[in-house]
Length: 300
Image (tube, rainbow, N blue to C red):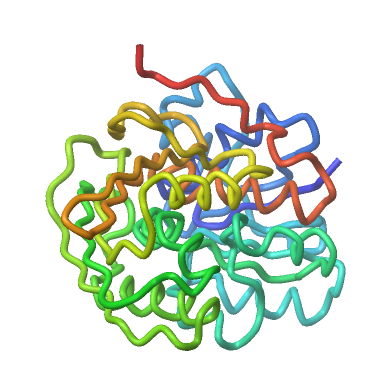
C-alpha cells in the first residue's frame, strides 16, 4: 500500500486527486493539508460527500511514501522532505515548468515512462494541461526529426483551475521538450487561446508542415502510441466530450494543402493534471499504468 499526503487540499486539482485515490486499490491517503480550510474535505469538495470522511490536517511528511504537492506555498516543505528522505517521492502539480531544470523528471508518461519505472525519480513535475495536449500531438514527429518549420497551435479551454500559466510559459515548456527530442528543431511555437465549450475539456488544434502522406503519418503515430494505455489515434473527428471524465487523449490527423492538422483532446483535470499524476504514481511504484484510472466516459 502506498501511503500518500496531499498539500493544497482546497484546490480543484487536490479534490480530483482524492476522488481518484479513494478508489485506488493500492493507495492510502494519510493526510490532506490546507492553509485556508479545515474540517471535512466534503465541505470544500461536495462531490466527496458519502465517499470519504477525511478531514484537513497538518502535513506529516515522515508518515508517507508519496506527496502530491498542489500548493506552491508548500514546495519548500516538500524540497526539505526530499532532501532528508531518499525514499520519499514528490509529484509536483503546482510549479511552473522552469523548476524542472533544477532536477527531477518531466511527468509526460508517453515520453518518460521507462525512466519513471527504472530510475525511481524522487521528484516528478506534472506538465501543464495545454502543453500535454500539444506535445502528444507532435512528439511522434519530433521523435523522427519530421517536425519542420513553425508549429501553429490554437488551444480551446476554459482554464478554470490554473490561471497562473501564461501563453509564454506554455510555449517555452513545449519548445524545451520538443528540442530535447530534436535539437535541430529551429521552428517556433505560435500559440493562441480561445474559449472552450467545457470547464474540463481541452481541445488543441495543431498545424505543421506535412513531411509524408497521411497514411504514413498515421502509421507513424500508431506505432509510437501502440504500447501506451491512454493515447489513441482515431479516424474520425474528436471533441472534448469524448474524453471528459477519462485519462485518455484522442488524436485525429488530416492533411490538407501540404499541412498536417492534428486535433488533440483531453480532460484537463484528469489527463492534463490529476489523472496524469496518478499515472506517474503507478509507474514510480511498479503498478500497471491503468490501475485506478479505468474511468467511465460521459459521452453517449
